[in-house]
Length: 363
Image (cartoon, one colour):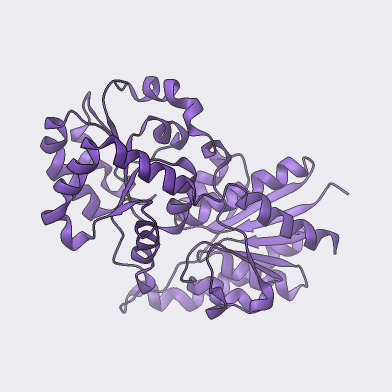
């Protein structure tokens, strides 16, 4: 049988969307006649990114709970009921053989309704600290694919499979794109290129740092590819010049990674997994505004293995320029970081996850 049907749900940020797309791509490779449907939140970035990747998507009227009392919070019960009803209709009509959730608000109603109908569900948890949606869904899942050890803190141990985090297939060998990358970004191959990533939605503190340090980078002869995030693009696009390329979002991430000599990045789990595969020297600036400070933990685990550098937000004013200067001056340091981060890569993660889905299909 090859005409399987799969529903995938995950969104809100690139960290949930791109793993879902990577899993779908691998399933499509193995089952060319399979049907795919993504389910996301109506007003989030998955409604654009998933169709761009060639898949159909339906949107639910769902959002998360804010930390303070807001009108959105008062609407949450109505949104949840509406989304459960809509998700039930989607599952009934599409009749999936397996449903896969990669985190984010929309995956909750979809996996809950699918499990009620006896459809096997697979969860994919990217972080070392499980997200609230996945924790709530754990009892409904047949398999839970994780990237870190000790996840039995959150999930039933008999359901956990350590697979690693899926990444986009075109990132597996970024070096092959290097000449096209310089041409695409109109950069000088003779100059050191810094790639700045604040996550798919952008990061205000990272953007403020880069704006402040533009003269510093210029004096060092550094050219930049700067992904500032859609919410910040209008504010920062004025800095786009011959040596500073400012983007709201990078659709050609393989080219960006290919051109980069040094990378500054947040330390979300999906970003860390991608950067291990890319194998370039990284300075992490972890976000302090995440559950259990998991970005700092992600970054610190690499720093301890001499696989990355880290500067916390509170230390940027005092430490950033020295850390960057030392790294820029030392080819040996860059080489060591590259080799050590590359050694931590899990390039078969997507295949491992799809192997688990195949097992459910056959049993």
